[in-house]
Image (tube, rainbow, N blue to C red; front, side, top):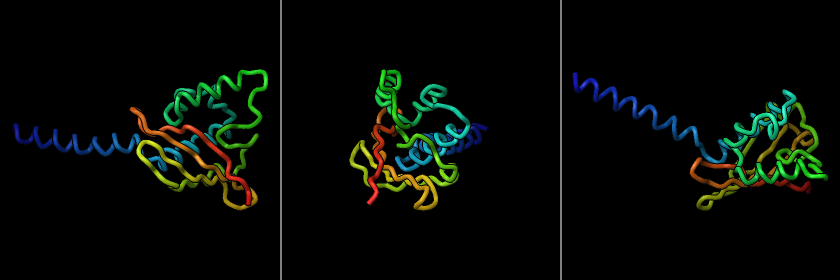
Length: 147
């Protein structure tokens, strides 16, 4: 009986370890998951910075959230959505989010993100992330200039 309990405990522990690792994910996984959730939130007429800050904190560094909140509440406000670098999203972005690793060095990473399916509707971004106690978090987003 003790052997059975030990085997069950071992199997349960082995099963949980990948789940915990997957929860934090790689920079690419975090970035893709963020943009899929974020664009869907916009499509659902939500403003994640106001309506779902706790969920946002699972992907974005708290310092960036504070800076964006401060800027949004300032007299000038935000001219565009910081994360998509646009005032609105394209419907194709709901089903087409692609991230690619640009490089990881220690606790920092950069990802290339393409929202959209064609040159006409695609938005190209560079996303920087840093790794802390909670895992990878987005620290900045820049638009990739058109060539």
